[in-house]
Length: 80
Image (cartoon, rainbow, N blue to C red):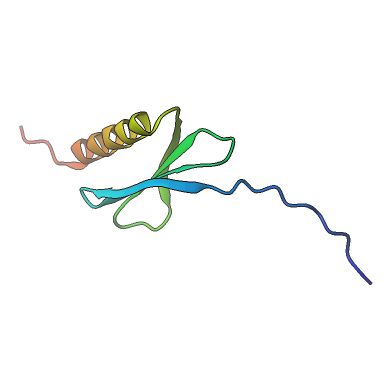
């Protein structure tokens, strides 16, 4: 007996840029008809820590770098 085939709609994402900053891994991808998606992976995790959407490549990189900067500054112990 054959099972009905369901069409799967997946957007194939093309990697625009990937880099590391302060141990964090950043990936910026774009689909055929979707805006840029940026994802950040923490050094000790293999899953996505945070993701976002940006209209341009430069804005995606700036947003990812700002999130990393805030995460690093929040993780440091404060000296009184």
